[in-house]
Length: 224
Image 1 (cartoon, helix red, strand yellow):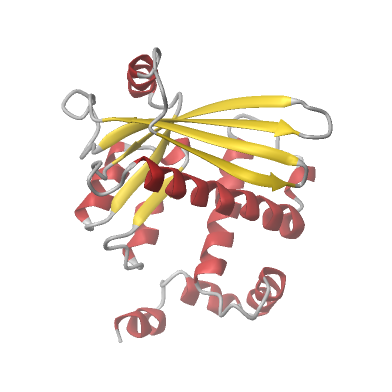
Image 2 (tube, rainbow, N blue to C red):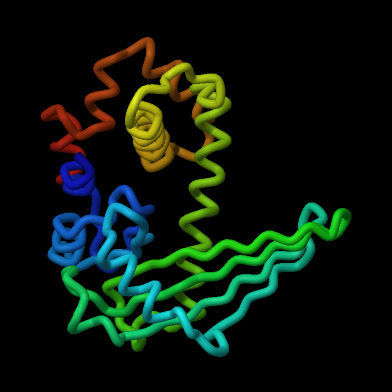
């Protein structure tokens, strides 16, 4: 589903970020084939890759880069990253440039409560194209968009009160909502809110197909 959406977008030279659900070999090969780069989160849907990266960084020493964010909303956030090319010839994944582990520590100033999260990842960019600092920036940009997207989805789709509970239903529907918001953001003129754009599209279903590049008119405009 995701690949046809990218067909209509010029991604050459871009970093395509995705969370674990889209960490797939087929998508990775497609992105590099389009002369772009992937930046994926690795979790349980790639168990062998996840185990290999976790083992690689099990006895990690000093991080390759550290970023401490200024106190924001009463909390201090520290991000650390470790990078390695040790799995490039070993990992069964297309076009591996390096793997990484990111550690995110948050201290809430008022309560002094501390949380520590780790995330594993893989990218097609080699170190000479994206050092530790750049990888942290790409990762931070991805989750900034994710958090903003969650707010928009909850406001416009009332997701937090969704009654879908069975099987993979909640996750699948959430992905569809994020896809819809992503399309709306991509083609937004910057002046119209997502709520206004959704109301406009609800009144003219034909425009939905134009947004998805599924009509001759929209394809012609894209090629022009």
